[in-house]
Length: 251
Length: 251
DNA sequence: CCTTGACCTTGACGCTGCGTCAACTTCTAC
DNA sequence: GTAGAAGTTGACGCAGCGTCAAGGTCAAGG
Image 1 (tube, chains in turn brown, green, purple, cyan):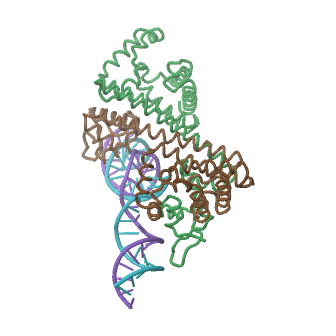
Image 2 (cartoon, protein in one colour):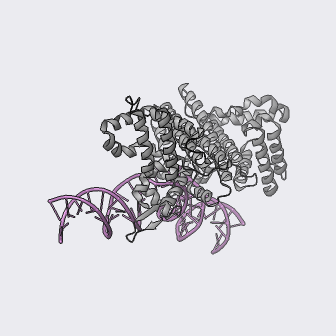
Image 3 (cartoon, chains in turn orange, brown, yellow, cyan):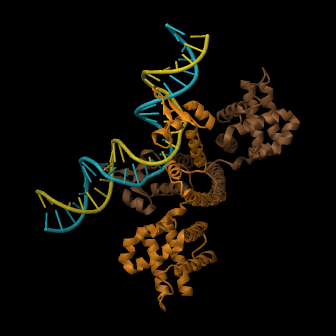
């Protein structure tokens, strides 16, 4: 007893094209092929098809499906791998959704569509050579180790933190508040504290903190890539001024 | 002031290939092209690039990105649409994950890879009394005989088929496609055909098919146990509407 | 002047899982 | 005998680039 391709397709709730596809990739062969080339499937192939479709509904890719069907042994293991993948994807979507939400809020608050992710610039492998040239290979290695040690979540948090700081700077600059205003000075304090949390500069040697901060502040203006993070040259100059004022007062 | 393609790519954390791609699809043109064909980008294009990348990270497709960037007006609306999409995807993944989990459990309980107990609702002995009350003892006996005659494999197939139908219904309802849409109408056709394959109702008497389908459709909504199969009252209502439309047109 | 080597170009295939023609051949029914 | 349904094998399409391939351009050094 066997059935034509259309019958099988209808019965199984799929299409003949799909069945042919499974045939060409060797996932499900017809049990019989007529002299005319017509495909026919028997009960056994129907059962296999059911399993294939089941696994497909669970979200497995065709290669994964094939693997599960061949290696009868560790089906559960394969499914667990898949499950982990699903959870990861869900996580990713959740993060995206949150990001979209906050972007919408920003837009509705009259904000512009900003480039928060200038901070993939903090995918710091990008700056490898430069860092090594300026501060040595060890500094880079340490930094790299630290970064990896954060884990994906930690990195996300870090990026988020940086993004918010940059965002606030841009907002402050745009608000017209002077670099000496409380707003800006509070930001400066946050900024300095943030700097301290970057490894390689933990607890500056006595008396060097001020010079360090002043130097960095100037670099923000001099280096376009940093300046861009603060909304261009004007923004960077604003940050520099605020940091200078803060350093003079507090450091 | 402008930069070469590599510089821009590094700075923005993307690749030159991507920039070229954006060029060919007209999403981001270089600000200048050298006599040698080299691409150069200025600040303005950099800003645009940042926005593009931001939107991409939020998960929008390139056409959607283009649209958002052109229609300055309803950016928020576009993002909200996207957000809805994200949530839907998340929902789908969550369902898949649950299904995978239960499948794993089954496997570890020594079970086979089958599309079994999603459809325990169709373990029809459950409905024995009700069927007998509504349609008589003979109807139930016939049905039971038919069911046993299917054999284990046949029952598996049957359950799988039902499962896919239900799943497709839920997906269609969630997709937002109207009950009159092609998608839903195709499903309705499948549903009616499926009904025909249930014994006890083979080849409806002349002219009763329409009434039969309409009656069933209404029952799906009225009876919670059926409604549950379609994702609750809303899902059942969707199925009912689709079946009504189909019955009016085709039966 | 010539050679590296880095960087640029266009062109085109690859990947996922089928949907969707296109161009033909076969089977079924009247 | 002929129409119409159903079957066949190609082959393109889609999303978003990654990844060669083959070759031009340019700055630096021998």
